[in-house]
Amino acid sequence: MPLSVHLSPSSSPMFSAPPLWEFIKATGRLSVSICRWLNVSVEVHRWHYWILMLIVVGVGFYVLMVIWETMRRSPAITFRDYVEDDFYGIHWGWQWDYDGTLIRRSLRPYCPACKRDLSFTIFIDGSSIDMPCICGKVFSLPAVSLDRLNDWLTREIDVNIRTRKFVSIVEKQRAQISPPTGDKRASDMSM
Image 1: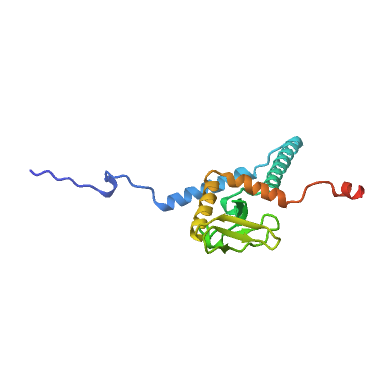
Image 2 (image 1 turned 90 degrees about the vertical axis):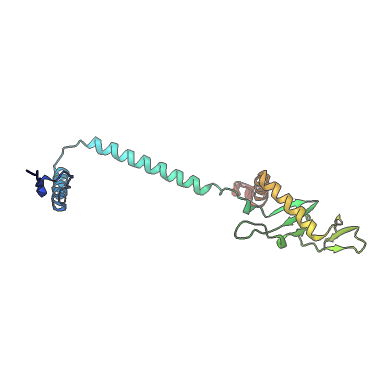
């Protein structure tokens, strides 16, 4: 006689999850229990409130002090802040592109004394590049092509960035620009 097996849906060997409706009812009962627990009156002494208030005020004061210090502190110096330096006895300025590359055509020489633009005068004999200024000073560089001069300057800028020397240069420039901090009233009284 052949053996036959009849399986009913309730005797399935696979795991069956409870229906979604049971889960929703259980979640509702849990929410009601939590609300009842939160609504129970509890007797608490006043000193608990005072301690809680001191903690909140202390943490709030600490957070305000941290925010104040971070706002007061100057932002970190990046290579994009490095836009001028002195090379070969001449003050040079430049700009950075939006993607962080040096715009080579933006390299401009300035007189270190009066900060005016210098114009290039290249002698026909190729002996030097002279850059006269309106203030009467003349700056000379060895005779090279302007492309070669841009290469030299770009390399110098790159070295200062890789060695992080630019950070001290920018800090020194910012210190020269920012006014000295002192008591204005004391200086007014001495006059």
